[in-house]
Length: 136
Image 1: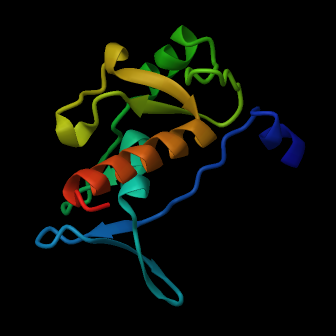
Image 2: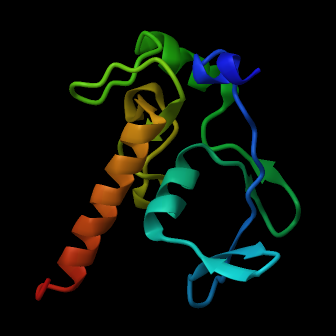
Image 3: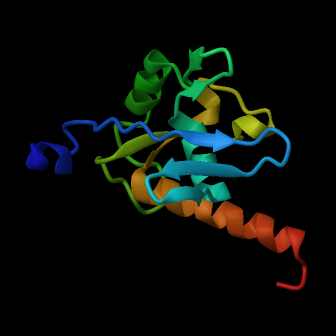
């Protein structure tokens, strides 16, 4: 099983419940050792592919499975980040984030490996922090 996962032949589903306060917009993950603050990069990455459960219990996926398959096929099942091309641990990323009005459309989605996806959101978070605090 480990070899199958390492070679990209299987997906592992993990349920991670992120609770977001509608008033202060802070986010936490409840753990056995208390709440863990969630960074903007993790939130942005989760918004790309994670299911969202509304207050009424309804569940939505930002990228429907059929559209995800189309994006992966269009991109040759390879990471599209410059200089990468990995075929393992692929994820679908919104070029224009959902929070900025981006939609789940073929032209707004791109295939990235997990490593490049994390790096992209970390860079975006650093740029936002620098813009918010010009003394950095």
